[in-house]
Image 1 (cartoon, rainbow, N blue to C red):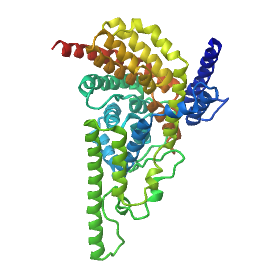
Image 2 (spheres, rainbow, N blue to C red; image 1 turned 30 degrees about the horizontal axis):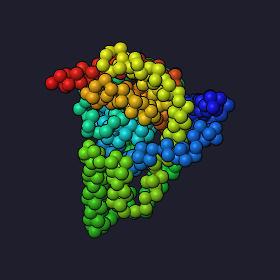
Image 3 (cartoon, rainbow, N blue to C red; image 1 turned 180 degrees about the vertical axis):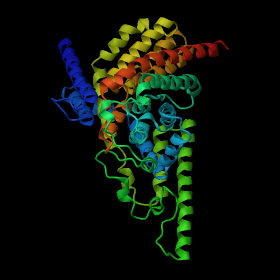
Image 4 (cartoon, helix red, strand yellow; image 1 turned 135 degrees about the vertical axis):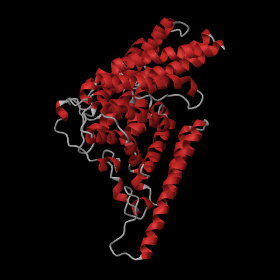
Length: 469
């Protein structure tokens, strides 16, 4: 029996190690199959090695998270068609004082979009846009990609923890921006990386008319010739398109189409706002996002295939494989053993215990990624805190959420958002940039440690004041 358990631990660790290596280094010489295939390989090995059964593998896939990602991706596609990127480009360039100001603006926009549309969706749709912004200003992409990947988003429910997390989140964004500016001051001042010296500068018009182009998926413009409102009007100038010498009736018709387009955009933003309000009211996040996506599809009143092709199904498959692989690794007992070993020293009623807890979460978040860490440790940490005092349970969730969120900035595997930025930047048409594991780690380590310490101090202090009152 003991031998069977030992074999399960060894085989499960091997399967997880393969997944981890391919997630961090997708083009390793001995198996250059990429991150998505590596995730599926790790999941398959867990089943083949009988670490978990096939039914247990299916049960480990969190459909609510996949539904939330899918729904927000579709909503993002329609926001994009409603010229959201054009307005975003104008916001970034409005009274911009230079590269450092631009970097801080991207940090803020990343934080807001991550809070509204999930970090993964935000990174997937903004990476190529951020690359174009950097190229337009003839700046190195590295600090801007790190700004996009490292801005924070809470993993816990919208309203219940909002006030508890808000002070730490605001300070975290500010400190993260300062660290980025200080670390890459010379790059932002004109001393560029060698690999960027031959980069092509992108025109401002191309930034403002940006359209997301997912890997291996057809471009949205291929489906824009079948009569949708978004294809009828020139989205850049919002002026009707008509031939020379067109009659007054044609002019009137195109004016009508222009107003219909404005109304369509208004409805897109209104539905999106309704989705956000529903999320703030505590409605089911997954079904709320899917309902908003379906409402936008119906509003568009045409074949939805071109828009659905914009969804990054490779990302959803990656998550499926990751869920199964992490579940298999959890069944080996290694994460539980680590927590059982450290639990006596990780009480949140004293500073040393909070420090130990933070280090455990940082380690596990960069071993199995931050979302699985919350799934693995959430109930255990909350139960341990409640055993000390019921008043500590809420504080434990706040701390777990904060540390696991910030821990995602330490290394590429810390969160799926990092991998998305890395992969999207590597595959962006004509804008390829390799955000390597070591480049990310150079910034991630100091940023994570500093921001984690500041955020925990704020949460601990403010929570202590609240309990006292």
